[in-house]
Length: 607
Image 1: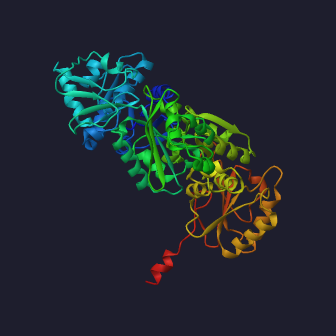
Image 2 (image 1 turned 45 degrees about the vertical axis):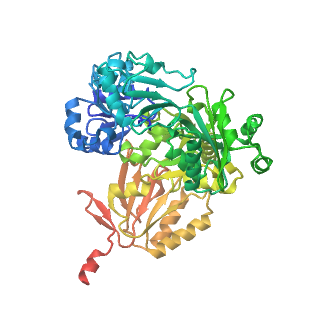
Image 3 (image 1 turned 90 degrees about the horizontal axis):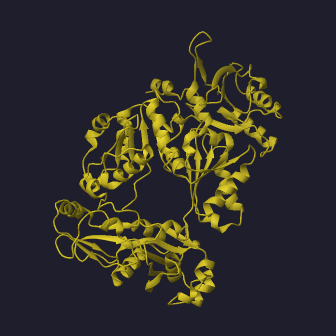
């Protein structure tokens, strides 16, 4: 069963937000969402309580409402359908006196309630029968266990609560700890009906309730590009021949060269088992224990066996190979067994990822929800110190790697290196990460470098609101027709090239967004740009000066091209110069907007 997502605390008052932040600090990946009319510093502001809660529920998020149960029930009433699919939903009183798991008790809500209650020094109000009486939920066993046929769990739990004889059929090695079940207070017998079967094998029938410990590691090797179907078919065939259940698999293991192999990644997803990686040197240490060592494999990747070696490395020195290497046309599979439940986080290393995240201008209300979720779930955050500071409490669960201004290459290189170590890394940019920001430099380092492990990384770019979008939104609709962006910084681009682009923009009659317009050492370029653009458009062309967008000291002012001067601008400012069609509505005594017409009036006149 997939682990529940980290909780999202939803607060609607400042008192509730304070409690939410205190509790969220104990849970990695958690977030605090706040009603924006009352709470100014949440990870993600929202406007409508009902709409926000229903969206979180539909998305399958774990919800902790820091308000009354009545509010939660009224808001989610229309969403409640299939109990089996319900995510965990809890409510906490704003004074921290009560915590109630409302939905998804067997899907993580009860466990989360106990954890949060321990921080509040209170008893959780758990009402589900098995949890209340015995502290167990058969369809949501503890970490390291999975169940087959969870739909049967309810009837088995009902039998235990009714003191009906329930048979405990244990096929496991004595070294496997089952005290979470036997010490619960529930009474089991050597005979009776129904039966709880503890085993690493597949259930005998579809009606048998079975609990499986995570003691198996499946090793996979394959040729580059082997299909997902072939690998999945080989894996399921190997399990069937050994009479083993996929629910007993703690993890899928392979050589690190296969970190980006889609077929193996898909197999891990299909079996709901994490993929763990080993170096060739680590796998070569397992050679004395291999059943089928191969010189051909050694010549190809530097170890004498991938499938068997990875399976054995995963279970450790006390584990044994119980399914030797099986082959298909382009893949190999083997299974090893550990003498106890495995901690999958201690097996090899994880698959690393790098998310290049644009956080917008800095205000949480302008940050995309996807960006917020990715940041909260990241183990490591890399970025310019100011950008990390802007994230506030959202960084509470991550290791921070702050850098000073101007260390862009170092930031990107560290983010790539951390991801190559199996970390879940977010590289933070303001605005949009793909616009004058870190995304292009990351790909440049990969392209120009010789680090093959960087090319295997899962890298994605999370979009954000760019400065030009923010400036346009604050001033009206200046980007209503064709536009371009030009950076006036000649630190990385020759000034001659920048001048050519300015001249082209002037001739093309584009609205022009000027990034990096001035700095302490560079003040003349803006006035040169003004001169070039004035050759192609009127002196009264509207100009927008937008400074510190989305931050406390935000300022958006309007001027004209002829009145634009460098002493009005700094490096925190974006300058947007209209085209010949851009219009200013209003004057200094009225509300003012700038817009660029698209041409709808002409279209209407011709139709």
